[in-house]
Image 1 (tube, rainbow over the protein chains, first blue to last red):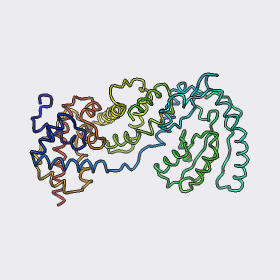
Image 2 (tube, chains in turn cyan, brown):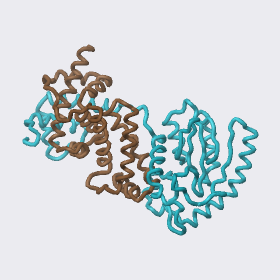
Image 3 (cartoon, rainbow over the protein chains, first blue to last red):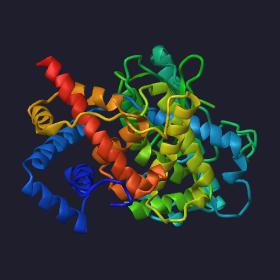
Image 4 (cartoon, each protein chain N blue to C red):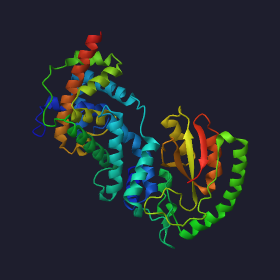
Length: 243
Length: 182
């Protein structure tokens, strides 16, 4: 008892919350349980503490920064240490696939699941460029037909160097495109988070002065992502593809 | 899951933003909830969350595995939250709570009969930050007193003392509020 300055009874009382949260074990648990069994006052306190714990745990958190907070962090990290993401920086060196959209399950599969050779990245980009241009045409048609949706295509890697600028250029790396999204004013953070997670999208910039968010998407998934986003008109006001 | 978090931290230390994203998505909400429960200010809590995860990015390589990743992370969050209190002059870590009358079984029985979440919330707000933090960690995060001591960076005996006083004050406050409402 010298450690706490509490007498035996007080120390038992101090440990009651940990019996209430079921983290007490060993000698402490035996001692406190015995005291509770022998003392009606302690038993009543324990019931009260369990009730308080239930109230505390039941209290909902109405909001958290979520994906917006992540986007802000990634922007700051990119500014602070752009060289720490050596995507496409060294020819023939194993590189990490840039901007992250890794799930925990993916991540724990090990480094080989999140790294590919530069050759593979370039090949994938080449393969998707043709398909993207086809999609660009289709999108242009869509623009004409649905002016309100104003969908445009950015051709990904075409016509720009395969090196990410140290200044933190927000343009998409090879094999990846950017979508700009205008969310409905009524969309909640949890709705947005669920939608982006379901489509494996990550906010990499925004909100802009106009309230637009930029998300990164694999070239291979652009069509599906746009379709999925536009299918959620209660959350999505507009989607465009671009830098 | 602890091993998974350790793996993610190793990846983050190597500059892997994918691992960082996964780590954030796993732990952002509990960490924010942890900070938010100690500050009654959503925007300030958001700023602190940002600082915490920036420190994760910068310091992932310093994690030595002597504690769980969650304890390490909550320790960062706790220090930054207390720093915010200090900057605003809202924290007197040295003072102990004033002596209160023993709550006795009536207070506890009164509480046990109530389901007044608002009273619980209000009474938690009245506790000093380190005491409230200890109660929140015990009841919301289900931490052991050893883990709470690690997060707060104090001996286990100090946590027992804080919890002892916090419990007395909490029950006393609830007795008063529920008594007035009755």
